[in-house]
Length: 230
Image 1 (cartoon, rainbow, N blue to C red):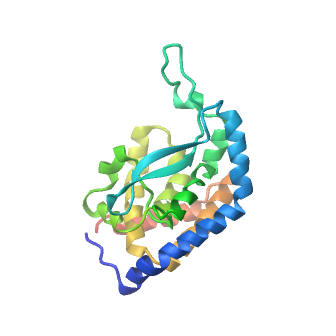
Image 2 (spheres, one colour; image 1 turned 30 degrees about the vertical axis):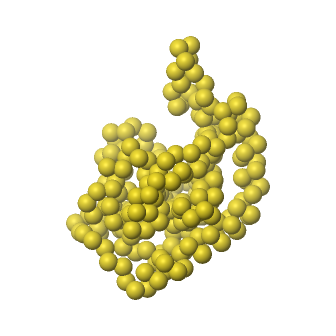
């Protein structure tokens, strides 16, 4: 189902969203600079010379490819035959913490500054997952900038990241996550974006204290159900 934006949504998307994202990312980098710098230093030693950043080609708005930045949370250790060790053997304790708190996504604030991402929006999916998330009505997300956070990203953070088996993930997480990206495009606007920013902070605080933010999770599940038959 094609989504037609209202006049207020169009105004927000074209005139307001970019300045808010730019200055929000700038302020975020300044406020989070101690965490950013500390993470760089810790990963430099933990990654054993593998570097602290890596980039991935991701499709953004209008499916334009850009380089998404992340902190590197694994070493490049290899076995006797020169093959990379399994991911579980290469992720460092620091890297595991950085992932669990989503600190690994902080470098994407730089993507927001250069205009390839926004603070809130659909997550930029990996190119090998493009056909899973970007077809039919779900390709409507290409109409808006991809984001650092949003309903689909938070649903994955709260629930999806706990499921490591790919088949189980496809059954339990994938359908709802895909619907939430479509949900975002329907609800895109300044108030929904501000709500997602608040939700992001809440979810991270819950994670730091080892708790699951079930009330936000339940809200997202209900939102996804509303779009499944559209």
